[in-house]
Length: 432
Image 1: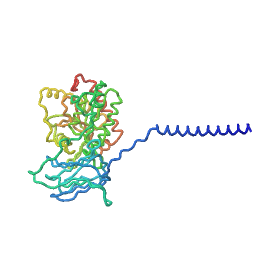
Image 2: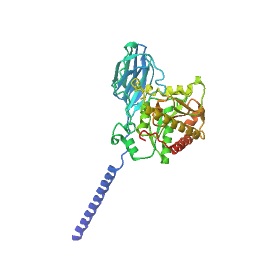
Image 3: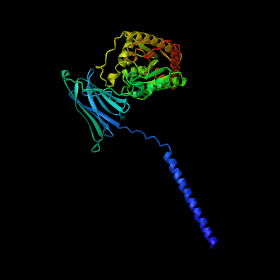
Image 4: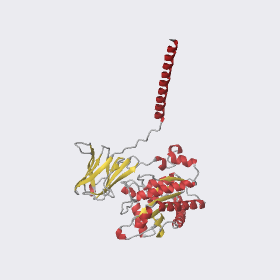
């Protein structure tokens, strides 16, 4: 009897051990699962799936189909006449030619990201108009949610600009806040890194972005994408050398106003500002090829340079920013003297860069030019604008989208940066 009891006792104890072991195993698995890295949740933005314009030169209606209801704010601008519609960030899945031609009061329209979290539509108008109605409809009866903007023509004398006070896009505070505008601890990563890192700062500026595509190749490639890819590769190459710190004016498909690109350079006490672009010529103007390096000048070096500068300086207008309130340049003798010195340094870097680039890339027949580019107007930061080539030229376009060409050319630009800053004796930074 005693041995049978002992047998059952041992059996019960064994079962308890097995059960406890299973509980520990389950608890451990749950603990591991609860502490395991959770997959990142993809941000899902509203989707714009279709667009249409109806009406005539008296009344015109713009309709954008969406997969959900959103908020919208519309206003009109003059000189030139435009309508701007600000909406939350949207994924545009519209036909590739959407906006190239309009109807009625809308001559053409464009759309895209204007800042992180915000998208914008800009209508180019055929004449003065007012916004009669602007609203977003709920999805109903099998129809999607819709953004509707109704326009009515007005007389030129009756036109009124209705842009809100804070109509300018808000940019990333970590890179654009002026050093003098706030204490270092409030200026984000850029200024705090600047105070702790003594290395010279190179600001790389990929042109265009967001709803400003820049030039477009016949095969569909856009300048904003080509130059962003090049700028990222250049950033990586320079940072790999370890001698300099790099700040990008944009590292995604976001629009940055021209004036803020300059502010980014000045706020970071940049030793050098390099703006990256890709040119194009209309078919009727023939063919051109090769890279060109531009510096700032009050008088353009030739008609082509002047025309290019005029086109590039319209970027803010393209994005629907009102330029009539832009302050005039300060006519200060110290700023003028500093700018003269800065232009000398800019010209020196342009020559070094041209000599480096010609060893690996095809250059324009006149590789060094100058014109009044707004993006080069920081009076105390040496600045150049590099046109990598012409997307309108087949051979150039093949190079511009080639990784091997990009790698070689990036290497030549990085080498020029190293040679230029290694020879500099006088710094052009605002605080030095």
